[in-house]
Length: 344
Image: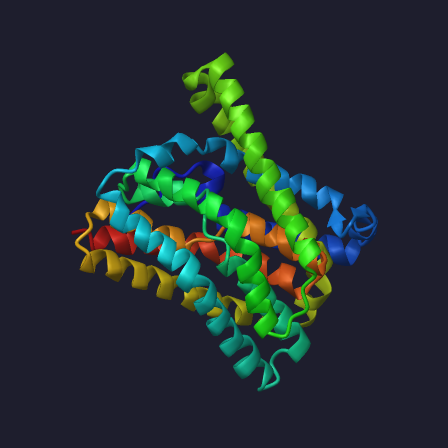
């Protein structure tokens, strides 16, 4: 399976991420005045420069969503949506917690590879990834597997609505049983800042632009320009994050590998479970592929933003969410290949 359908930046996203990691580490070690200065611009635990970059990443996803699609659910979508909702909200968050705790705390911390407190922070970051199903790149994964575009849109729209009510309680519960202290006021603030505000602004601006500029301009000019801005914001955010994490990474680069292990296992497990379920229910490939891929992928922009707000720019939780970005694209392209090879 080739990478057709991916833009230039998306196609080589893993390379850009790796380059930003290197640049961030170099900045943190040789131009430390930059992250030190930016860290001072913080209000109510929200770092303003990072918040602006996060909004620039999330808004393009929200403005693409046509919530009218929710009203157009076809009869053969019901089984697929049942699988999507069950995997994303009843299974995925908890398996992420299990895999992350097992490897990072029970195994890696016990055998001295990672200090216990740092391992707990990594688990917190993994939890945030696990409770944030994909809302953007799943459109690309669906396209590459010839998925039903309307069904994919319905998945994204309904997941964004579910995030509003399910994200906070699930995150709070999983971090609570992990003995990770979590300020609920900050968590609610994060969801309001990074989900509610972009969702409302995306809906209103989409409605206005379609009415005044037309569908063709919106899809052919506006959205492509936003996509580029979103990727650029992502890369700048990663560069800043790793400028704060540079010391830890240079001291022990093994941490990046150790964090990635449960994330990789979780991705394949969730995809396999959802894909097998769709096959048992005899769903067509154009429904089964996006149903499995949306759970395997993550809304990492939200996870990164909440990790920064809750735990800080230089926290282990923030680093874990960034590692999620690093491994996601090559993993998802592998799953796309598997889905196409096993098409029924």
